[in-house]
Image 1 (spheres, rainbow, N blue to C red):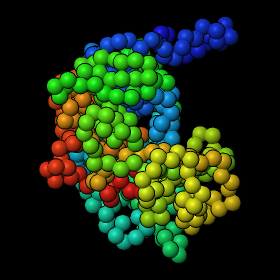
Image 2: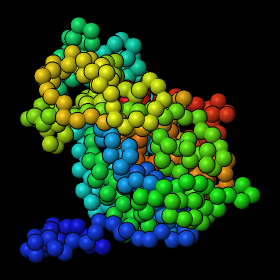
Image 3: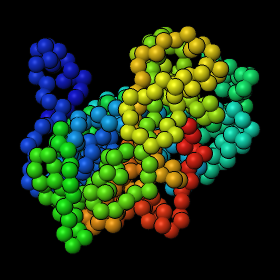
Length: 415
């Protein structure tokens, strides 16, 4: 598989780009693997890549019932940040953020990482106190954040209305090294790099059952036949409960739809990411000029990926009071993603009651920003058989032990 470079681009331009190879291989499904990972989203592909790169485990299959990156990885708003309250959360999100910074070079694929900075607006006194608390916690954790005054927020976001009648801006929590990346490019980059190292990526193949013997996983049943494996990774976001039931255990998660939309393209007007948790909305501008707008998760369990007009109306109605300039824009498209929510809004990473079966789920609305750190941690856990330092606090057993990692505040509206 050829490396991408300026020289390669020039060479292929001279021969009308006829020499490019496929971005990743499309192999036949084998009868047996050392590791099978269910789910070819960002988390599953990152896990496969780090298994191969960091641990030399290359006899791996990533099995996807649809197409690569067609689930939540392609249905999010691409925000990357690590300004979380709890030490455990800050550690894994900061690992992910730091990996994002060098990911294009590592994968030899441009993921379009844009460290444009993230502001979380404080629009109530309670919210302002909460963000001061997070800023102090981040200072202890080694995560670089700072509090902004309303005037400093206005300087970074000229289109904002500070003195809205219902939602005045009292300050903001600023992470300069947060930002965005292209979601499709992250999935494609991990797929290409993993495939180059020998990982088999199998699309359009649904897992219909999990086989076991004596409490040990032995393989999976798929629409293309049975596949044996020594270790199994379940990395399917909102469908984690379905796969867990196949394996014989239950998960403390709920699946709901998280909706977003983009506006028609306009000239550049905002060059940072703004999250307004009080009004349940957040805003950034894409490279194509579209305003990317999102809101909170649905208040009821569902597997819808279509979105709903009333939810969009609620989000936009509140946002235009803080950003009046957007009031006359037309909506270009909307969508929904299926997110898996735990009671403490923190993920589950590690072993399951079925020996040899590992799980990565429960990221809720914070899945995209955690992809590199999540994949790194789950790969280390699967390779050794025991949770690594990043994953250890997020084990499934914490719910039985009452050892919650509450991120209801730092998780914000949808991140």
